Image (cartoon, rainbow, N blue to C red; front, side, top):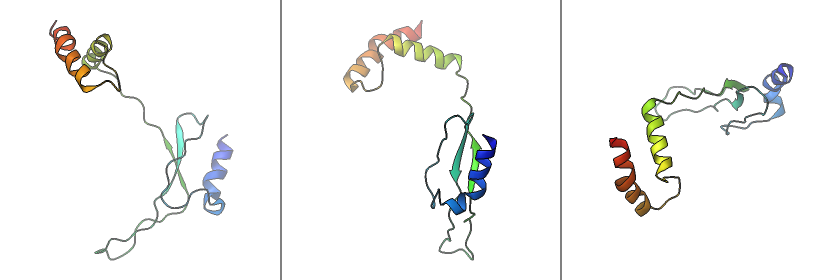
Length: 107
C-alpha cells in the first residue's frame, strides 16, 4: 500500500489527478491519512513576485478527536434527555431549555 501511495505522490503532476485548488481526497484504508493537492501559484496586486505553485500532492494525517470534558458530557446527556436534537423548531427548543434543561443543570 505504501508503494501505491508513493507512485501517486511521485507522478501526480503527470497523471493530472488534481488541477489547481481542489478539495482533498480521502482514500479508504489509508489509516487516518488523506491526500490533497498543493496550492496553485498566485500573485497579490502589490506583491513583487508570484508565490506558491508547487506541483504534486501532500500526504497528511487526519486530526485526532479532542477529548470531551466533564461539562460537555453533562450538557450532552441533559440535552439528549430533554429531547433536544438537530432540526427541532425554535419554539420547541426554547420550551425545552426553560422547562427541562435549566432545572436539570441546576441540580
